[in-house]
Length: 113
Length: 111
Image (cartoon, rainbow over all chains, first blue to last red):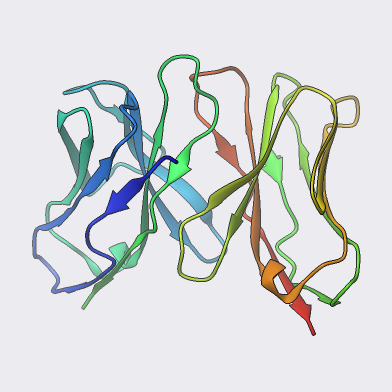
């Protein structure tokens, strides 16, 4: 089974703090994704990566950055957390160019106060 | 018009009912169709996957794709309280491109 692990399930951070959300997958997938999920807005793609050190902006990249130094690990960084970034963050991975389904982690609930 | 439309519900049914969940889409280029189930405070898990038109059955679940109408459905037979979750449809134009999600339908099955 594919396993996508998000190390932090619940976080509370202060406005202005730098926040790191970590994600690790164990299936040697090339593609990795970060989404946020909000009531009424559904899943929105923040960033994705199709290879080590490669990244592409999704639909809502503002206020976020990402890092992919190793194939199995994809980090989401909130440079200066704001209250409107309070949300559930979901990491996902997908096999290479022929992949069509993605596999999600359990989610990280972030509250910014 | 949004690319993928899904009624958010909530949908409440008694145990044992047949449930029909639906999505419509506007782009005829979509070829791959998926249904994800998401329990409260958990990540979505892949439930069903179909390619192009037709039906696919897996136990109590049947996924149906009608490309001519741009309409996909998920049927749940003999629904159980454990089926209470949010169901997300998702679709893809071609392998390797971005998955487009519906906003999800919340289902509650009462015993």
